[in-house]
Length: 205
Image (cartoon, rainbow, N blue to C red):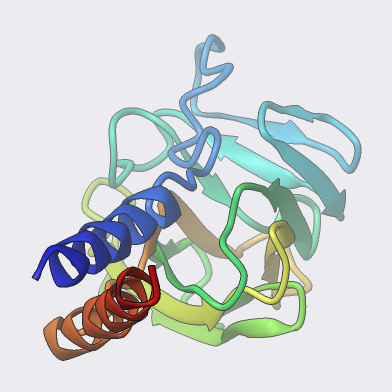
């Protein structure tokens, strides 16, 4: 019994350790010191926690309403932009879920579907769309999107890339990552297996 309890505790400890992975500046509140509607950040420009590439991005302040706190991104600056961040501290073979909120720049209704791609390295992710047909700047209907992946290494490059080649891109805010917990049965099985191993070692003494 002690072995089973120990195994369960170890399993929960592993899940707790895996859940410690975080994303820096996931809501783009840093630096967040400028006044006005938005500011352009070109490739190589300063966006704490992130590397900006492509045609840059726009850090949005009052131009539209953010999903979380005060700031969000238009992933198209002068054209399709990208942001990348190296995520560290992952547990190999652990499943993770990346969640983010998406909307779109509503100023160009002739091109209503705003698209972005997201992923971490070559794992998970895909293409995500948002329709701005009925949207307005004061009241964007942000939608939560997500994808899951299984870590093949302890670190990986998380990326978001606009698929719009103009300056009216997908909007992005409130990015987070969390470990996907094992189903209850999986935790019990893992705990039982660890417990059996402990009991066998005890019986050999």
